[in-house]
Length: 265
Image (cartoon, rainbow, N blue to C red):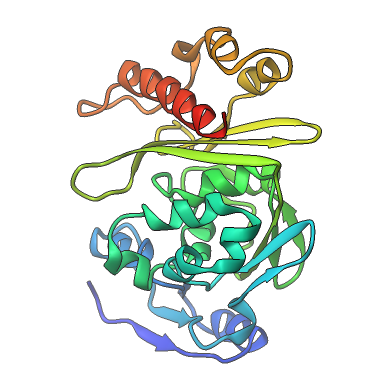
């Protein structure tokens, strides 16, 4: 990697100012997505604006019908949080199976969401729960937030502050992890709300995380097995590569959906 200047602001306002004052800058959260991208020469900022000292970005709060999680909250803190375990247990489970302990102790929930890492686990949780993404200047619905591989609705100098997750009646996640990295080759989140179901897939989408509306509709009046049978998984637009070709990924998404639905019962 090339030499990089690091700024360490303590407020959101200063972080935005540092970013705007720099000619070529990027925000740094836990670094578990950005640093590997820099090592692979996929990103080469001259300045990193380190958000670790901005207090507004941390914390987990039960808000009654929703759970607010600060963007800089570490994965290990979500994994161990009693508040999370009581409000939306699936989030703690997801945190516990991400990569390895080194990543979980350093990585933050907001880092992968802000970067829309296609192999991230929490993108599926954000989408399936219909979370609201709170930034330093506005709120964005999960359905509008993800726009493509490593692409989001965030402006270049916009900071993700927190995610507000509505509490579902039930939710579950099933994952097929890469044997070397632990990142998601595929992951399926399912959630049941009073008004219906939501299903989201990460790790295999050709354009990143996506929903399966056909399965959501089928679950409204069919059993899990009947709903699965009603969906043509071979039509899903997924990544096609030599290691995990499209037919494998499509079949994988089907059995991961079966697994996640079985967890709910």
